[in-house]
Length: 81
Image 1 (cartoon, rainbow, N blue to C red):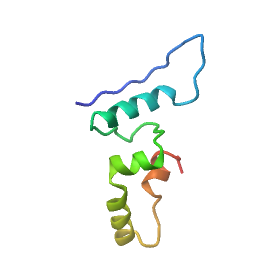
Image 2 (tube, rainbow, N blue to C red):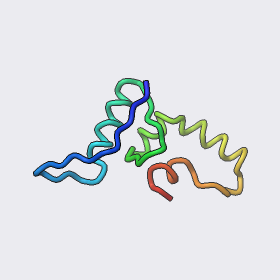
Image 3 (cartoon, rainbow, N blue to C red):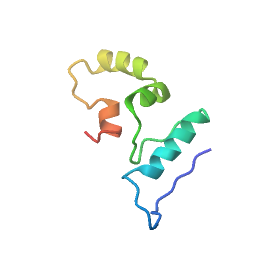
Image 4 (cartoon, rainbow, N blue to C red):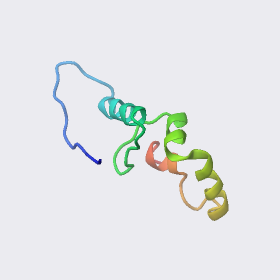
């Protein structure tokens, strides 16, 4: 199943940036799913690696992009680098 949301909650209490995204990311991982990476992501590095095959990704990146021409996936999707 895929779903998305594009809106803001207006509340009297404030939350840090990405608060609700983080809640959804945690629940998706708890349920064994993955979050599409087309929107803002706030994963901690370890959780990101578990969800998106960090070790295998780094093996493939080293093989196919040994000069580092392209940003690393975590940097691109979470750190926005």
